[in-house]
Image 1 (cartoon, rainbow, N blue to C red):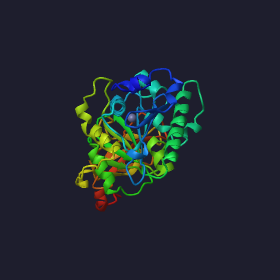
Image 2 (image 1 turned 90 degrees about the horizontal axis):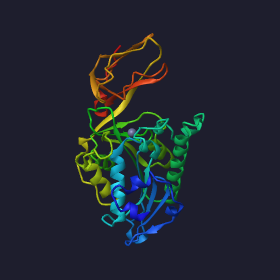
Image 3 (image 1 turned 60 degrees about the vertical axis):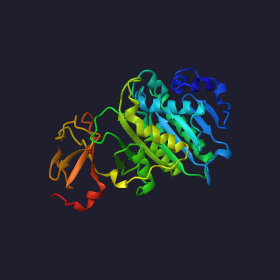
Image 4 (image 1 turned 45 degrees about the horizontal axis):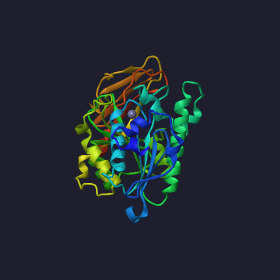
Length: 350
Ligand SMILES: [Zn+2]
């Protein structure tokens, strides 16, 4: 196993091969760091006591490829693992690396049958199983199991989960983080971490969800984020320069070095103010579906109309994220967000 992982593509190659049970045995590197592969795309790194950053042993889950065509994060993770195996980097925190959806990676698709980032927090139990969907239902369940074991075995230190993505849709903020509901206000250290990762904006979610980062946040009180690091491209076409900050910061994080001290005001904070729902066949959406995420609209702008309802921008400015007009009646068409610091400027439009 280690001979594969010495190369920058090794973790990606292993995820495309049949799993060998012998990979599940701990391997020890010359510096004492231990690794084992528990499943396809599931690699645990354990740091011996002598290397542990005191006072407590911290634990980080770094996941990628929950959407199989989001190749840059998969390359970043595979490269970092090779640097650990070859001794270029000595980790000082315990790490669980997860390549979320190897089957969809093999076919260069976002998913095989279901969007896996809707299946966590046991949402996989609420689907009727079919031959098509069972791979992703089972995979989400087993990923939850690996994260549970890992965080339970590392109960004392701080817990972090960074779920790395890239997006198809263009965005006004080229990079952004989604902070799951229920974590409260963002500490300055967390803002500095996000800025160091190259993140421009953070969107605070306003309700429970079924994403991987929500699962870790809700179940283990982990500092957890879904991170959108840039644009989707096929394997081999990603420019490492585009992801330089994220790559460097992840190296800093696993070596338990200090994160650069920066002005936290650089991070633009958003919160959800409304969800636009399609309630009838009469629904009309006055935003071009092709607009960039975080495109802002001024107060009073008519966003949507439906039977007995309309939505106009209430804050001085609101931005549209994740617009998708092609949804059936009863589902969400878009999310309206506003900058947190603009909250005082609220004037209800009547
Ligand atoms: Zn994604």
